[in-house]
Amino acid sequence: MDLISIIVPCYNEQEVLLKFYNEMKKVIKEMSDVKFELIFVDDGSKDKTLSILKKLSQKDKLVRFISFSRNFGKEAGMLAGLRAAKGDYVAIMDADLQDPPSLLPEMYELVRSGEYDCAATRRTTRKGEPPIRSFFARMFYRVINKMSDADIVDGARDFRLMCRKMVDAILSMQEYNRFSKGIFGWVGFRTKWLEYVNVERAAGETKWSFWKLFKYSMEGIMAFSTTPLYVSSIMGFIVCMIAFVLACFYAIKALIFGDPTAGFPTIICIMVFLGGVQLIGIGVVGMYLSKTYLETKNRPIYIVRETEEDYKDTSEE
Image (cartoon, rainbow, N blue to C red; front, side):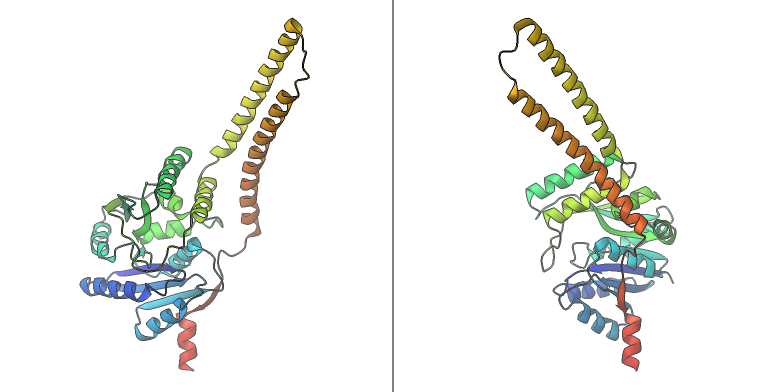
């Protein structure tokens, strides 16, 4: 029998964990010809998430958990789950039920057939999201697809079912600054996209604020494109040309008409403009340097505090 590993990153999900678990049990019962393991990754939650996971693992042998020493972020949670997964097929899902577990049977059949290596999901609508957030999300997908060679589909979710070869390919990429949507596209493999209407959270509140999403989008652009460096260089060249044209213009004007004014406003405007462009260029270069700095430190992406194995050993004693 095939084994499917379900990876569920969790951060303060006490309100939805049991609902998600119950929905997954329905799917597991439906897919009786397949074995499952549920790997919950507690990303340093401050609520009762970990205690709920301990109870679930104690009563259900299918439930495993990994608990981080602090909050390392969803990317670290997904990586930890992928490393721990033992399945022939591996799926990544959110605990808030925005990723419908009911799609798993169809996803499994698509990948098992051998025609596809991955069955991934994308939302056809962003119903329930603030309009401004939806607008910037669409703009981000357009920009990053033009800048990078990774195929990142608009509306793509992290919810996907992958074959073992694709999972191993993802795990071979050991970079510290991870952007999984880009990694999924960069490794390639044959992917079947399943479209569905956006589902709102079953309970609780989203952990992704506008600022966090903006930072995450910048991580993606820096991780899979060097275009901002080229843009910075082009802007510098354009500004130099503008400055040269202005210098010629004012020189000719002074020769023909004289220069009755000191030109203080013009000088200030040019200085501010050039200063702004220089700061943009330095900022872009600095962001890339900071990513390189973090990579060379070679720090672990996450630190595990305990797993279900530690808990079981303790309870046996």
